[in-house]
Length: 223
Image (cartoon, rainbow, N blue to C red; front, side):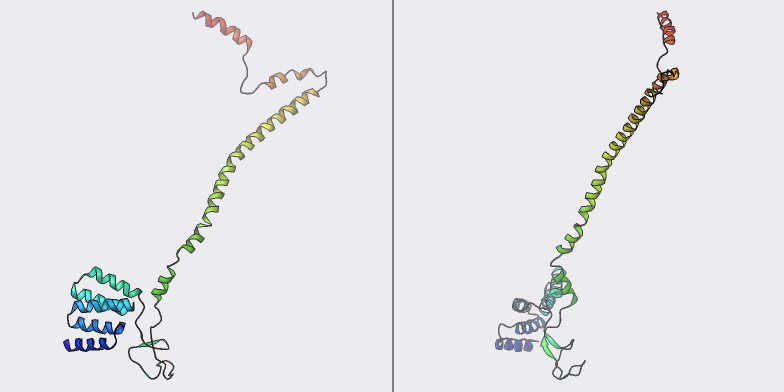
């Protein structure tokens, strides 16, 4: 283990300030239980090239050194959102080792050292950057519906008033027609006198003067 750590240190001296050199040094230090060196090199790799493997390596160091599951989950969530590590890719196939031909099409020299295509989770995260556009489209049709309901309530009041006015106009029209009918009657028609009784309202029959004369002395007799 210590021999692997020394070889990793020599490789790092040959290629300084490179993410791969720091990652190799961090893995060798983790195997040698040198957590301070492993953490330092893993954090340096993240600063130089933010990638999935660096966060996963830092999560392994955190779990081996402190066992803090909260920090481990935090680092794993960052690893999910980080770009993937470079690998050998040919026609959508990711391989850990280089091959002369593509396993899909058989094309020569098809493998390339590059980062694989982004996963679906990162595409969803990128769409979440602008969540306000659909919200505005949903709120827009809601406002006219409320305005229409208010208009229906406002028209209810005037409708009742117009109905009452129409009823009053009908009564006035009936009265005017009745008056014109009596005015157009011939002069010798003496039977028009009962019209005075018809002129009385049905709910107000009036007081008979004979009944009033009989009741007045009876009331005074009580005293």
